[in-house]
Image (cartoon, rainbow, N blue to C red; front, side):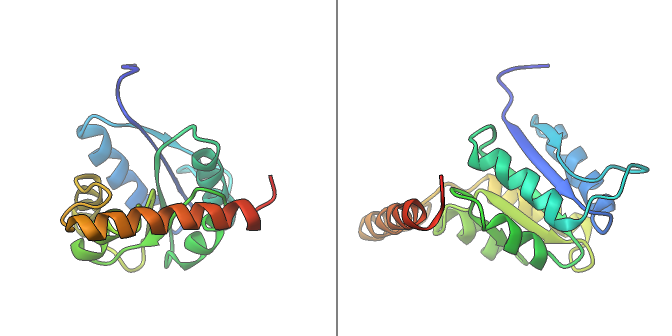
Length: 163
């Protein structure tokens, strides 16, 4: 294992296994180490909220910088992952939302609904997200504004989330 490869954590419930397999293969082909925190093919059932919590906890604890979650619609995974400090999940539908999730919101968890997103489309969305950096494509005033927004959100977390 190459210790210099960026690690991404991925998790799904049963309604995400096929898309997870496709995304894992794609991410690995791009050189990422992909660690699975969800249900596995033929394995014990893992409900969406437990898979989402495992991914979100790993990011909140700074063991990973980025993650991917997949359930049937994506809604339950977003709701669960957003409960963790420092985890900013976004359910994306097109390349614009994937890019903006990172550029504007500094999203660190991409969420998919396997029932809604075909694998080839999901791969395009992951690539758009991975190839975008926070504040890409915005003018200097907006960069300052967006950085301040993220800092304020982090301050909210300090008040709202228990240690």
